[in-house]
Length: 267
Image (cartoon, rainbow, N blue to C red; front, top):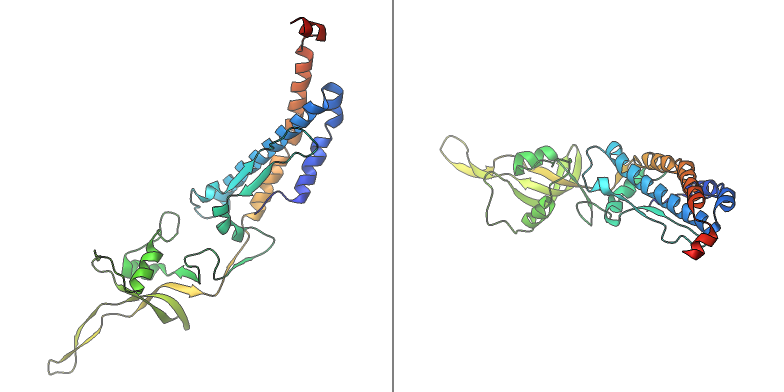
């Protein structure tokens, strides 16, 4: 996903083409093509670096994994009329980053990336903390393995080492804020409670069930990364004159210092 757009490609082509005549007058067509390949590669590399840096500003406390989302590929050939270098998002990170790019709000539906393949699950942090002793990790996410453990317990598979004070878990529906929410629910402990004045007691829930992970039909995301990405690419493209002029100066210096043809034959 998210390669260099056509207008950027045109801008790169136009800028490097502006140096063709100068290279042909001072060096050679082959030297010009090598300069174009190196410059295009450097532009892609800088766009990658700037885009990865922009992740820090676009997202709230992104993980190191997300800060390495963008990659680039250098131009593999320095000959011919087609020279290409690429900027892209790594496949794993693109599953998440695709919701932060585009021309408008992005919609995530069940079956897309998330805590479950068949629905979108959102954590209820206070309930997770109070009944499971679980809080978000350093990056504001659900710690790894928690969703799988809740699913196992809801299916009847419990750990051999039970954590003291942790509520049981079942899969069902619960009224939350006036709406019926499906998901994983914490089951309170049960105990005896007296009834009447004759000493009788009954077994009751010692609390109310609490939703842990609730299913929603869709999630909506703003394309917070698109503008920073576009700016990263623009700043990288702006370096083309500097890069091409440096290549041209190197070509001129090499030509000036190259020994005369007769000397080369003698050597």
